[in-house]
Length: 141
Image 1: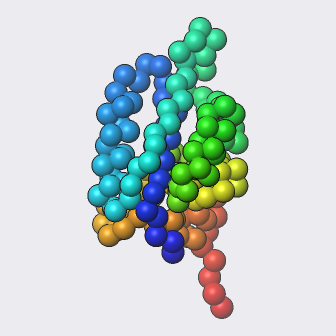
Image 2: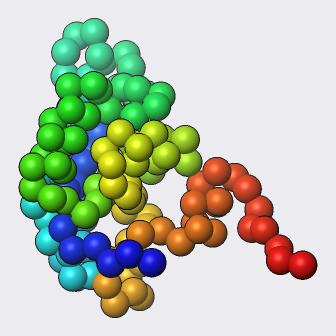
Image 3: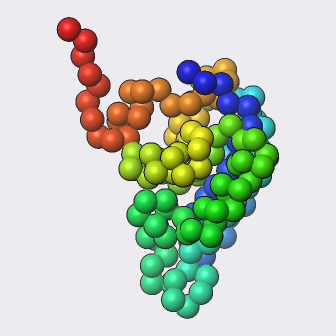
């Protein structure tokens, strides 16, 4: 279990979502309550342009959820500011979480990983990662 002290927040939001800043504020409050410090916030808007309107609810990338330019911005910030983890407001598949963690070089959490009963912010447990992949926990013999 790794304790996380500094994070960046990331969210993919539809252009119709007018309260996305409030949602990020609430996520930041959750992180702060668990002893984490938010160093930056990244927002990817979907459906702002005419071409994106019909695809508003779909991820920009099957692998990374967000677009390549935003991913590069996040990766640069993570390495330059020595960020411990990245917290997405959106749910992520196990596939997306693995690719994002690999690309960003640090753990990737979702809002669902922030357990209010915890006393500090930590990386997801192995059983949580298995659940993301749709696997059953292994039994020891």
